[in-house]
Length: 502
Image 1 (spheres, rainbow, N blue to C red):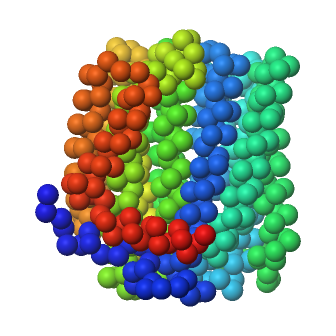
Image 2 (spheres, rainbow, N blue to C red):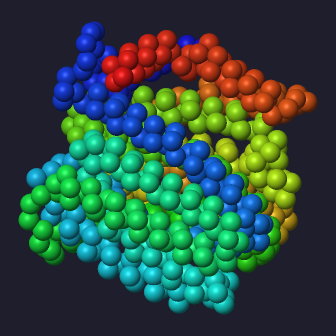
Image 3 (cartoon, rainbow, N blue to C red):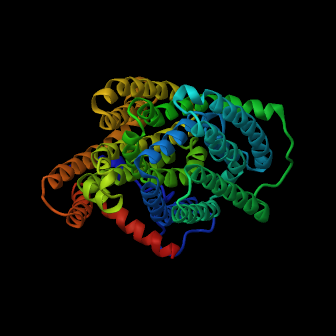
């Protein structure tokens, strides 16, 4: 297949391509982006096995019905996250990137604003709980779980400064600490055969430890210095800039989590349990685009005034993310059933067909990781609420139609369709966004067809888990290389950068 000449530009991990010899300069943007992305990916590589192990232990310990209640509780609270820090994170990264000397003041004001809204959100979540099917103990657990999901995040957000300064190893280490604590907590809970409310309390305590770790590192390394006065003008500026994202975040939480709340009410927690497991498994993959784009976002924000460099970063981000997400689809689809049987047990075999469908919902999520960061960097976030509400409306309507007829499998298809509508296709309505979207779609065609062909072919082969896994893991990168989705220069540059870092 003939390649788009644009795809042959240097990777975003380098401003001017790889160095001819020696290490990159101390202040090389390309090297810093690569170093921080590598740090984040290494952290994810360390954390994913911990998360998988924790998920398996928690699922086996709680059983289908309790897993459904657990998923429904945190899915419900996610509706109120837009009142906490969900809308502010990228605005703060952008503001601190361009006004680094005022970062302490910015984060001080943002923490007060976010915590005030989070308090309101926690009370509102508790009051509205019975309307969404949360009664008895589950109703009271909303307040405990809200501490972790709504009240603590405002105190964590000053850690965004490490993203701005490209010192991601600090938040990565704190995140790893929380994952280890949570795994140990789940092991102890399972050994004690603890009550369900103990699980929620333990998770909240792990959140408190994470916040304490972030605040300790910030103070120890003096990452935020300068005046810390609350200024209404700064607060109004942050609220005004974040408002489109807050509305978007609310709508996104609807089409990301309303399916679980609707299954909780319409089909019961025994049906919801396997679906929660499938969602958790697919969300492990969502960590990678966040790792790349959180490192690249400050550079995108700073390069808006240099269109060729901005376009180069965006093109290569799309190409990398699309190759990776379709690799996940190609590998997971044929091994879903044996994987679930091996690790989660026969009780959760119903998870396998749900996972086969839901893994494809990661494609629009990976796509949106690049697109949304580019939109915010260019100040185009005003378009985001429209697509988010389109996705939310599509998800609710499809779930109302699909769940009574197809149960959790219908909810899975509703997720894939609504994610694609919200993150890609609805945005084509806006002419200002079409060039940004077209770049991503061009890099999606080849890996999509390759992943689809591998998934269909291996699904028809009567082979075991490991044989299917190895065939998929070998066929996809080879096919991607032969078809031009992966280039020789990518491999050479990656090996050179790894050699420099090591």
